[in-house]
Length: 406
Ligand SMILES: [Zn+2]
Image (cartoon, rainbow, N blue to C red):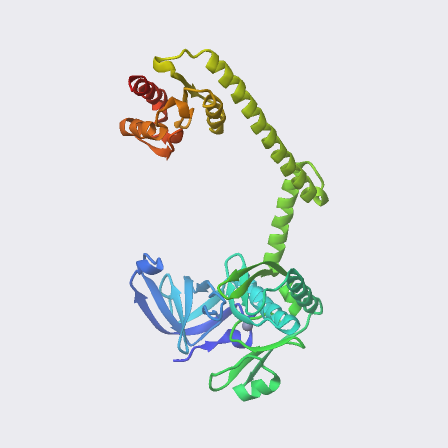
């Protein structure tokens, strides 16, 4: 049986009386996240909007029962409630803040889509009203920053003019005579929504009464999704909340940077440039320190069998790249091998002067067979990490014994 949709004629009706036509219990459905039984209630009339056309369903009350979901099944509207309505005659009440937010976003979408189409020739192919952000997908060439700003400004101009939002009924032919842009293939009497002198399109959704109630439209990011361009936007109360949040973030950023709002970009650019310069200096100092320490280490290392000198060190509290600087310095001396470890991360680095005649890669593999770890390299230079960082020193002792034995 057809449910009479009260929101078609008055989207501002928040409370209504209706008769229960059917009420069936539905078992829990884990897939839908429903863990207790719910009731499927059909009324003769309703102000509850079911999920459709990109707009989410209403929530609210039917007597004492909470309405959790509202769906459209043919001409019937199904209310999913958490308990059975207490009598055949019920009073319904919809969650107004949620509905009004949806009406602001949805009407704003009509307007924004119309401006993208009219000013920039970009048709909307889909609409999504999300919990936080709304999106439309535009088809055509990539909308430039100028297009996005232009559509936003044109939409807000129509909002400031507070034009009426009218509802029209008629057949597909009658609506097309009125200037409905979209092709309609449905039979019978259709509903169309007009934003005066801006837009006219078929729609069964809920809308505000005049464009002033949209409040404001803010267009945000645009990104490519498959073949289309997804434009994020928010209207009304959401625009207010998000603008306030953006401002707070900007204020916190300015406080951190110790500058005024207007200077945040230049202050951040300067801070990043300083960071990069400091990093460069730090690396250069690290290299110089490695050179000096390596020279000192070489002085103190005696020659072993066949004149092979082994410099073995376990480092701590230093960046891993220090091992590389240190090792390259050591490996410049003939018949010298560097066996290095970093105690914090279990890094190992083995390097030699080619004249030493050993194989660092093979040595590293032998270490990993005994201690476990990952890595690799070439004959003169190999690096990796032992699984247990506390084993770094033992791994070096083991490697040194192997070198002296072979
Ligand atoms: Zn609509």
